[in-house]
Image 1 (cartoon, rainbow, N blue to C red):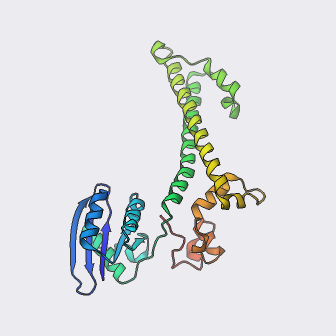
Image 2: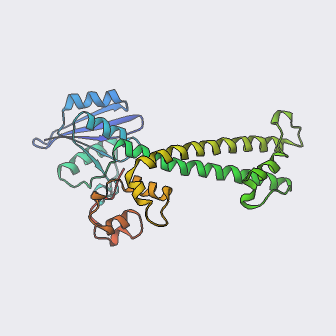
Image 3: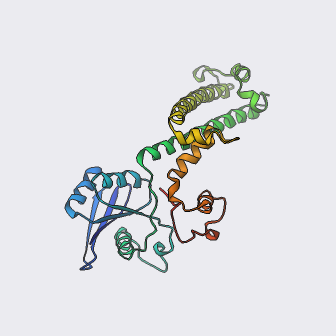
Length: 274
């Protein structure tokens, strides 16, 4: 059996081709390009491709699957993967250890959702990112008024239509501000940015609303009292395939509601995913 273990990197990757019958190994270093992955897969023709989770695992996994190669994605946090009392740790060492652990069947596999599910999940997470950016801009605007000793509407009233109108009375185009009114130019820039972020958030919400109407699982969850679209989106995109969990305790541990070490799946990883 030939196992191709790949230590993934942002710019360069190191592969280790392990022949489990002869225990022979062959290493290669290549650029993190799609054509390079296709070439090394074509040249090695492995029976199994192994890699660990990182930022590029998703598309590399999909590429290998499209080329009809079985893929195993490893959880690097498992006990067998941890390096203890090791002075040397290189990319080749990582690739070799990954190959040997796969040969010994000592790797806890990580669940990799389908590409469309990962895209959906990322958009749900991106909404939270945009909300965080909005909060930071709002805090920056409050700081500007505090520094100048100028009163502004309190609480959420500051971000209503009336509140924004009150704030806008203090804004000026930065190019037209003198040395004593530069903060008004900063306010103008911040308010412009805030308006753009609100538009981005509205665009995201419109798309998520369309996707939610097309997803039967989200519609089903919304029939539960107290569960709205946003909650249902998080549940569906994070859990994805519920059949990968054996019972409700595994779901609770995956969601962080109970410590994994106290759950019945402490030595398993059906809930670990990319």
